Image (cartoon, rainbow, N blue to C red):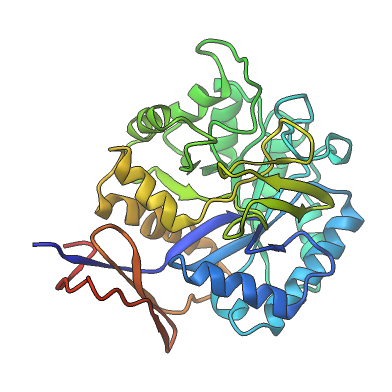
Length: 356
């Protein structure tokens, strides 16, 4: 018998924009943010960390202030956005590692920068992505952890020893593992193997079939093992939107008909157009996970990663619940006291718990 699945709402720890709205736009409005969050809610996401990427400090400050004001003034922001993800500026500026981030804006890791950027905001920076091989990076990791932030490795050339040192200093995540890297790397002594081998790191993956070949993703999930992997979208304003040109952090990116998002006129991927519910269906279609497992990868596991820093800051997430069809199509989403339904007359499945 076909059975519906019940799960908590999904959690996306890396989302740069959605539904035509760029979260890195210093002119982002309350109405635009609510429009993006409403579209995200329709994919099953009830909690996200809007992500701001590498830029000079004054630009980062302006972007975060605008984003924070939009979150605070919006209808869904206070329920869905407990804080922010700062991806950069302490990344590796070398070709291939920088990705679409501007290398000229990448400086030496400054442990005091997150606190400076956060000052006066109504919501904290909860996640910092950096490259631990950069000078002073370990001090930056320790400071971030002391300030109740998660730290992730990303856009990094870190070797086995550098990854181990970062984990010892307090890094616990890998940002979109397998991406933010050159096409050519040493056969075995490379940042992918170094982070896969480090059991203190939980790795985020973009399951769109573009950032990682499905077969490679299956192998990486097996290597990380149960409870040490999660899904992210790395979505841009081109997500939940038709093919075309979209703004992203002062750039113009183009979404192709195949779902790829690239810098205008360039070859470099610039985030994704992935929706998190599509990532669930992809993993099942590729034989990489069962429906129950995919819901944990996109919900329970990232929520558990966030829990300690939320608790340290006295932040409580609104209760949520999602009902999914057997094919992982969203049928109902509840966030706080509000509920939204997506009926399908062909669905008459009895409901079971996601953990059943």
